[in-house]
Image 1 (cartoon, rainbow, N blue to C red):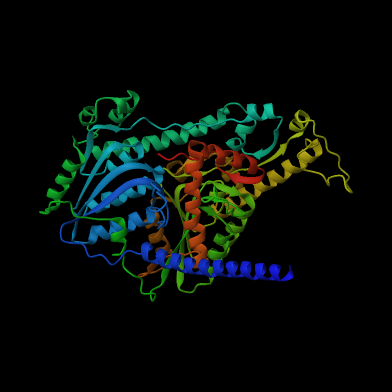
Image 2: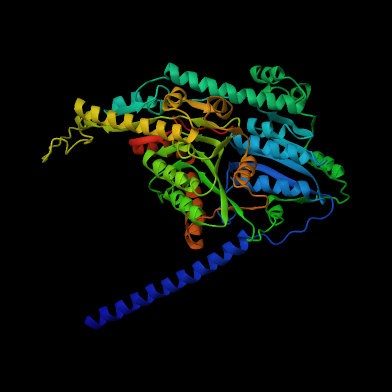
Length: 588
């Protein structure tokens, strides 16, 4: 029997050893595969080439291609705003590129990001090159972007969505009452609406006012932008939206001047081919991946303006769960800021923020390192679609803040939520008993409501946090805390409104931020460098690429229920002290 177990152990050990070796081989193969698939061979455009941009998927500030996307059947792409802006600029100056052909699909993007792309396309046209856009179905955001094209074509049976903007808030109080769960809420800020779904059954007047205000500001910018690009009136754009002409005969889009002509895709491509002077049977195009290979390499000898991207919710702990694979701002941002401060080659920093906020504690840590960095070299913040609450907290101390007109920012306020499940315990006939050494040892126990004295302690803590927030903003913006409080109170502003309130310095994109940073550093010549993650290649690969595979599987399994699943998880984790935007921002 002893010999039997000895032989069995040896066999099992051999199998495990073989599996280990096989895993190492597979991992090495995977790394090689990623390196080969993720890299695009050097590309040389032919004469009269057309740069083709397919607007499909989700637009993020600085995303990376997933080489496993094809193998897992991932249909939704993630486009990089950084890559698009850089390649459009390259195409503008490359004489072999005659124009841009946009094939618009279903793109999920914020209006501030779309503004940045619109400016890039307008700038591209100023070099005497053309931009042509086609779609079977123009979503509202895609049409806003494509409205700057020389020619816009729509499928003869297609749709052009222009319906206006709407914001919907889901309220949980009734459900939680039925479950016997009470959220004990502490907040500072009349407009801090993040807690309203847990305490009301409809929007407060103040919250409704701020939502209506910034939505109107953004929609006015969109309608005026379309009207100016198409040579029509903003009233005409609003009439199209108000009459529900999205679902009318597509010829209405031509009558209203929104589309130049109804064409099928082959006809649109034939037009582009002729415009570019191509004689081949098929349209000769260059993709974003191919154009990226034409980006100039940095010499490493010039002074550098570093661009640090901070995108997503601010979280102290980054989860590795399959449904938490979206980008977040973590303690890694703190570490990168420290590295930039100590890097002598970096003479200025552009801090690109696209965040609704999150953890008040981590926001304070990031703020501190921005202050320390600012002592050594200029820091310019570039705001994306949203930089509010904690997202504004980490921005406020920069030398300059630059936002897009449609950026959502401000929301200077603090809140805290702590659950009381005593009612649920009663429904389930659960009881608890506590033994403690001090009066407040069980403070925060969810099985009982807080006492009035405990509530006073937490409210005082939240109010001190708000005063700290005000002082950080006042110090950074050169204003008094009273002045900041007047535009604070948790109120959300569009970038266009924020500049009037003194919360930002200028309106523009990341290109203006880079130029401003270089001027502050008194640089005549410089190179830009995007700051990479401090993780090694394998960690980056496992976190991003395999993470997106797991996320794709989860979405396929849960289907339409995936977003509800995420929301339930967010509710469960929405406790403690937070500096976050009151709601999730829906793409245009």
